[in-house]
Length: 237
Ligand code: NDP
Image (cartoon, rainbow, N blue to C red):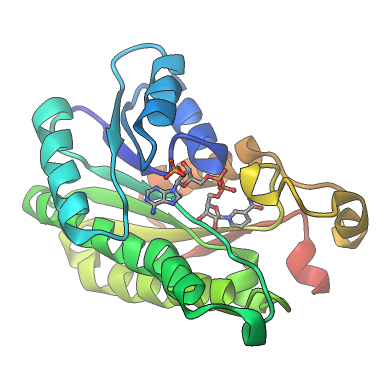
């Protein structure tokens, strides 16, 4: 049976590294992001038979239509990675409500919607594996990131509950929680200062996280797990 994986947020950063690793391992990939041109370029760079799709994870109809299109063009999606995410870091008292909503819609509701739609096929097939990309900040909290932390913490609760809900259907749900990783999301951070607090002394690379995502996707006896990939940051914050 074909191994088909939808990678939401697969056009850049962590999701893109996941897609690159999975392409090497023989998966057929759907690279999903809002910007279709960037997603197409990322899918093209993989070489082979991979396709790009434009979708806003926060829009239920968009997610439904995208899964229909993916299944028509690639076949049944039996692997799902939720790596789409945004941050709007600021102290809560200065955070606009629209920025609260957009973070929660993209980082939490978005993963709920993709899981909900993906599960229709996975339940029929009695087969499926999902990895949601959380954050160590969702476990530990961070000043200036209360809304982001809420979304990522919520994603852990959601994933663990869903893991219980679908385990009898032979579907697994896990979380990878990265620390600081070199991507567009972190390009404006003060790296020299921040990395002093990381026990391993450096930011992660997207491939560091990708290995953990693929490990969980493929580990047949692990579900409801949160795998922290943070260079030891959680030990000290
Ligand atoms: P990037 O900004 O590099 O990439 C984000 C990806 O998500 C892009 O492909 C983007 O494409 C897509 N995306 C964003 N919003 C939406 C949306 N509404 N619908 C569909 N796709 C969307 O981020 P990272 O790779 O750094 O982050 C990936 C995940 O890892 C996120 O969930 C992030 O919160 C998490 N994370 C990142 C850390 C880091 O240090 N980098 C640390 C901890 C967690 P487009 O803009 O075209 O839609």
